[in-house]
Image 1 (tube, rainbow, N blue to C red):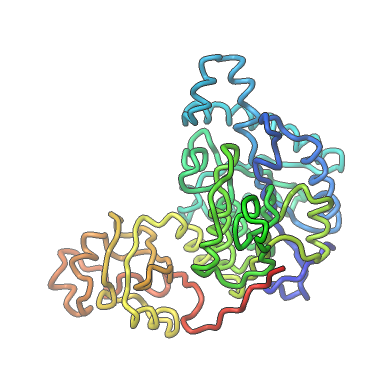
Image 2 (image 1 turned 135 degrees about the vertical axis):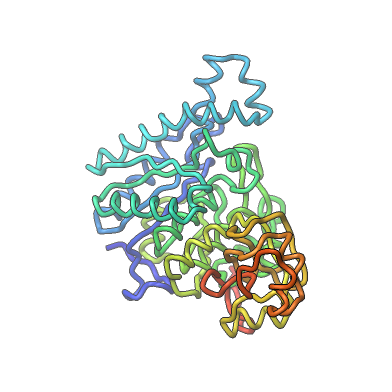
Length: 403
């Protein structure tokens, strides 16, 4: 059984289920063609771990690049549109390239007697409770059967990832899947060997940060966007993925996918790249879903310091008296963010009231709501049972290790 130290497994650090995200710069060469040699080496390592009992899900980029040449050859006029990152052209390229991507994985895993399944997902499905449960049920059945799911954003119908607006190169999608599947470990493999104190391409004194226990403003300040037009995320999107993973009770590692035997070495416990340690216990099912949906909350409310303490340290619901500001145009039943006065994320939850109603009652006592609102849905803006929190206020942050 492949093993790696982790803070959230009860079995002496055993990793039983892992999600591996293979980035664009790992899956494809500079010209966009699939890098069969690199992918094959990673598949060999994953297959060995799979044979030892590890349940594996792969989130793979590369479909757009893989389909570009075919699309251009068939439709020469699409070349300029692809160069301009035209969404429709890139979606068409993804539709073509996804066939090549899954065919390659099927061939490479087939050498080891392992079957694969293609699972194209959209974030809107995962943000719906029923869709979330359906995805989890399907994935669980595949894993139980010993099949390796090969996942990707469904670029033909979902445009956010393909233009790099919200998701970066499948980073946060992989964190969502790790959340859905209650994985022990999430590994993001790209061309960077981890998070540094500054850009190592520009600063020779940049230090690799080996261990992170809290994503502070300082840590966020170290992150940048993509360095080229092949990937869409950069380190910033990886930190967003880490935040989802850590709150979900999942450890995450950022590492260079070109390092020899990278997956085997990580699973053997070798310290490579940057590891984000989750200090949170795995959340119950509904809270996991809220954390997933919170990555694309429809709006947010800002609360005062007293409300922050009431929510995070005392386990209370969010009452209107503690709300100081309302952002966005959300409706009753939407997932919204809850922010501290400094703008830090405190929680995500299902709102009992629309943004317009929340603005009417913010700062008011709960007893006043029936007289203010045309439709009264309870004394809370967000009930405690419909809320997922981060760390408690006042918990000490553990310093990060550098080398």
